[in-house]
Length: 116
Length: 110
Image 1: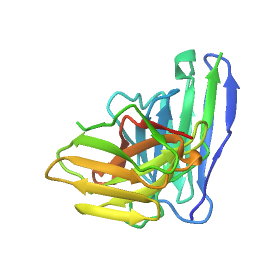
Image 2 (image 1 turned 180 degrees about the vertical axis):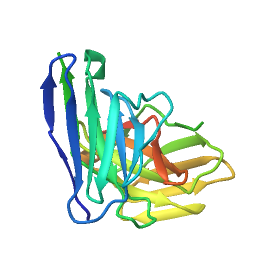
Image 3 (image 1 turned 45 degrees about the horizontal axis):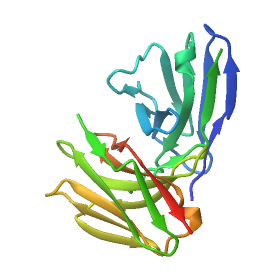
Image 4 (image 1 turned 135 degrees about the horizontal axis):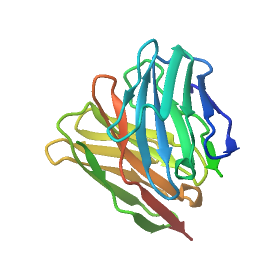
């Protein structure tokens, strides 16, 4: 199956700094990628839909100025958590569809962010 | 908005069959999919229903009834490795965004 690579897997940063997480589709082109956030023992919460060459579509309640998403190419989307605070600590995971209208999303390995 | 509800926990015996239900509320959608997630890992795709009825993939089957706003995942011949969280997910909107349900933690016991 298709492969999505996400890094870093783990990141620890100080409060007030910004962190960038990359999501790459390795063997297919992804016009659309999705960013999720997951708290321990909870479901995946969709944050935004990342569209190549256009602005991301954010879900209600997600601050677009805090969670900057850029989808500059068909194989790369980035999520930047700006001015991170301890409450931003979470598991962030991206996914992509390979362009076919199937139900399958391919997920990255996830990035665990800890803000001190 | 949308909502997808699942039982929070299910326990079943190794070798048995278990059904995980998903009820949803939405104004329109393309299909319902199911994902498995082991602790600390990424979700992996199991099944997708675009139409009503049963889809079978090996030990896993998924069912959708649009008229009842209901779906389920059926796992047969349970194995210990099936212990994981299972999520239903709705595909909707212009970009077919995927919204996940509350999740069900399945524990398989000997």
